[in-house]
Length: 102
Image 1 (tube, rainbow, N blue to C red):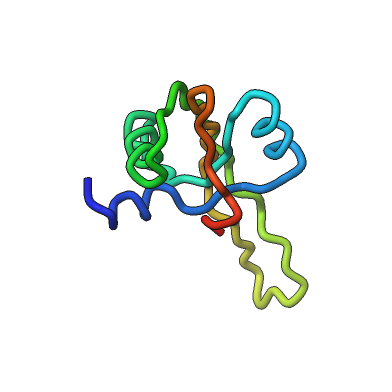
Image 2 (tube, rainbow, N blue to C red):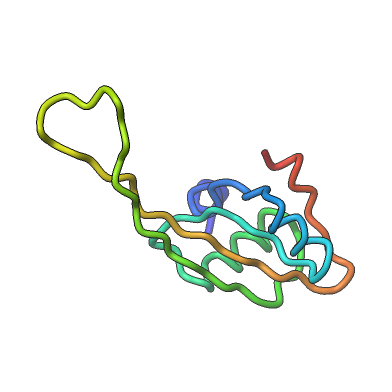
């Protein structure tokens, strides 16, 4: 896996109130990842990108919502893309500075 593959798998960190609580309490980080990536690829990408030890990866796929636009032209409606979220648990004592990632 080269650096380009890592950047395609890990798209961006998700920084919300819930993800911040997870990071502080159980050392779990949340990332938006490629929809086609599996848990093994996500684990390898996080370990290579941030030089940490990953214990567990959990994923969730979100279906795209119907697009709500006020300036919709014609009679066609659109949908947002499906997307995937990964919850990555790190070994004790390992951290990722997510502010530098953004």
